[in-house]
Length: 344
Ligand SMILES: [Zn+2]
Ligand SMILES: [Zn+2]
Image 1 (cartoon, rainbow, N blue to C red):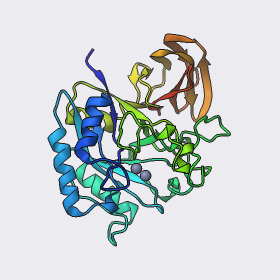
Image 2: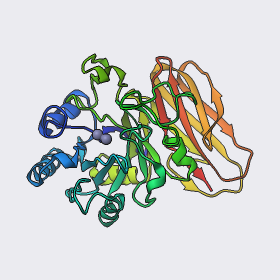
Image 3: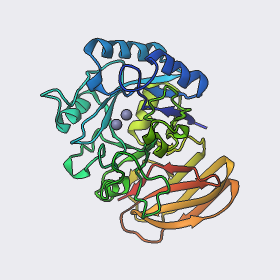
Image 4: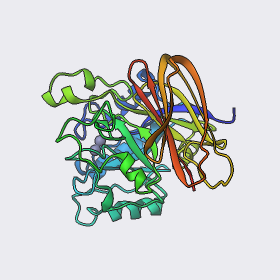
């Protein structure tokens, strides 16, 4: 095939912020123990000095080895007002922005810097009351192209009432209107990634969700990771694939997933006036209990195959503009989500 699938986690905290272990240990763990192909730290920028940021950038570049292990340079901008955003640069460096800095506290500043550097801005745990994202406060479609739909904090896809088995339960729980599906309904064109947002020093293989102390950790979920389709394992190819939303999210279960509409892969935006054939292909080491296709935010088609490998085909006879994504549920309850496809 012209593309391969790579696994990664772009969201990890360190000893320099509010997590455990130092950048080198985290890179080595992600690569050698969790067997990830792609990795980034996303430390709270507000907790880093300029010197520490330089050191982080150096470590990330040292660990970047095309063909083996790709790292990205990034950080977390931790505004409780505008919502937490992670920013990732396409190349070997970029400036650090802090939300408590007088000139860097506005969301527009994050977008401006991202536009200037062709960087990606990724909101996360959007549904949360304390740390979440009020979608009405701003968006830049050029650089805000992905959303982290799942992490140890839980799942922001949709509300508990709508059927989310892993809603965010800490820090005030969920606020309605802040789910990823609400953003998609506002015509945000977000591809999906899963992330760790881990603080326990074990990116890609966290143990947070098994911890009983501190108290709040009892309410955490299993971490998310992302899968990226790219022609090769280089920083350029991975970044381009992410930019094109050619990626998907899982709850750290390595389900293989393809989703196509009219033969176009996940993340695509295109126009058609003809037939709309759709294909979901999934393979997993644990039986696939359910495959669903969500159309314009509503459950639309599903199958319950209970098999390790499934191909599900369906046509949408309606010709109006629509967006679709696939959700796969394994027999053990773990979820995987394709990035959406938009037919205009
Ligand atoms: Zn955050
Ligand atoms: Zn974080």
